[in-house]
Length: 285
Image 1 (spheres, rainbow, N blue to C red):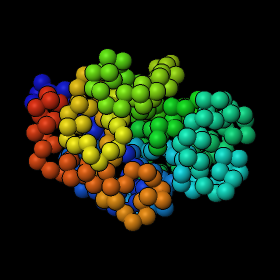
Image 2: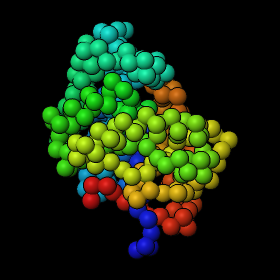
Image 3: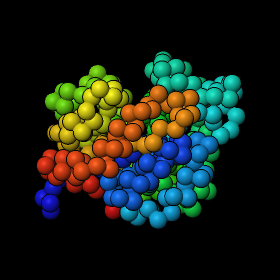
């Protein structure tokens, strides 16, 4: 295994609900993940944060910046006038139309992301190992520069990384998994990757895990395809967890989380990752 390729396996949405957090925490303790990304905006976050105490240093623990679906931590009269953040479709259309650029909305986003960073640090006592975005909002025009400014002002760019969703075209087409979505995310990520390189902020090099969350697809077979055509230090995102009764009110991915949890906790996963010539690794090691 010394020649195996390193891969960061990151479970998104820690803190979203108690069940999602419990499933991810169990996998982290068992060494079946090497990173998780935390939603400090979620009501379940403060309690879930307690279970991370012994995991810093064993896995990368990051902040999952959130600008969709959930209630913000503070007032956002322009982006969330009813006290609820917009869905990803509404936010993406506004970003691509450059309607997130006006100073008032940028100021709202900057204040909310700062509150989420404060909530993460207050609950864990330390800064995050990395930043990314729920539903990839951190790569959107009008958001990515706010994220980079947050790093410059509040964090040490030498001691964290940002998730890049950029991936090589042959890798996306070769995997044949949700290619249109993966291509869109990769195209949107190029601007963030260029800005990170100019600012000296590290990013992962290779990205996969994009899929349609259809339960009829065997997740183990999908995961083996995620490991195809890896970059130098790829990040594979995943969404395991125990579906709570109220999860559907917060996110569209519900029962499929159980499928992922069962796979990563079961005997197929270590065999699959070994047969694919990979090994779990941290970025911040």
